[in-house]
Length: 443
Image (cartoon, rainbow, N blue to C red; front, top):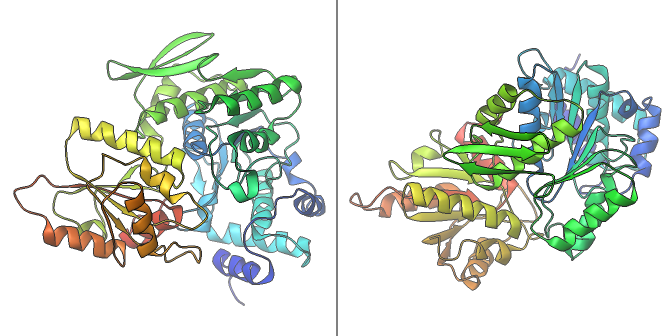
């Protein structure tokens, strides 16, 4: 008898169904009805959308709720190394990635219920999440949107405990529109009549107006960053403030000023959902929350060993102009505290604004090495990507791989110079490949 394997089950689905996204709720709703509508049997759901920051918000929400002693399921998308990363199941002492046997069995059941009808693999895997979360006990579900909001497969949740919209900027224009107002309208599709809405820090006033107008029209209690709640750094601490007063907290473990705003949105989301967190639980969450592949420091591993001795290596899968800005700001903070020459090893896919991403690093990066993203057939060629970086005002050259770039730096770096700081970024595909090769996948 052949043992079920989640990877084999998903590979089989990939051969049967089209790749990518086909935004609609009809197919996933039909499938969920055959499964007994597990989305209606789950614990209360915190539903999170946004162009950037939704993964960090999910991580902070989970950390706060678990520090409170609650059992938490979490759905995130995409994964970096293993499909299992998309599903964390609640457990005493903290949630765990779903084990292979449980995931494979759930995939098999969902695929059997679909019975070969037209559907995307993402829709099947979203239904798998609903099934897992309905059948395993928990107090709350933290659910991240896959793409957009209005027609995302997760948007069959009728009455979320709270809908959260993180920063909205340009990305996935082919699916969501080429203006931030249009993209905001798609994200606002997760807002449900009368259900609480938390709106994180928004870089565009026009996007904020769309989100607030939608929430008002649907009669939702609404909490807006900068108006109803906010957070800031003071004397090496994070101060969170809302109508209830001030909370003095540890700074978020996740680096970058943007994470203070992301953490604030998570605190507001947990409170809006009715899970009033104790101050010590929030403080513990700030100090313990992790989110792999987003400004993640790589202190050791097979990839790190190829770099110049003492190099300060960071990994981030951010891939749009908005992400470029907050990553550059985080690196500028590091430069202020610990000055080092900064190098960028970048790989990107052709659906992203490469020039917009690179522009954020102008005046900050000493040199860019561009690499192919070998795990995506949409990879931009390293020669073309180098040209995009140079057009954005950066010094750049193409190389064959991340390993080649690190070894080139190692071979040319002078011992008398300060060890460099290196950012590997531009694509979640690239971030996942680096974590896998480095021997440090998410756990």
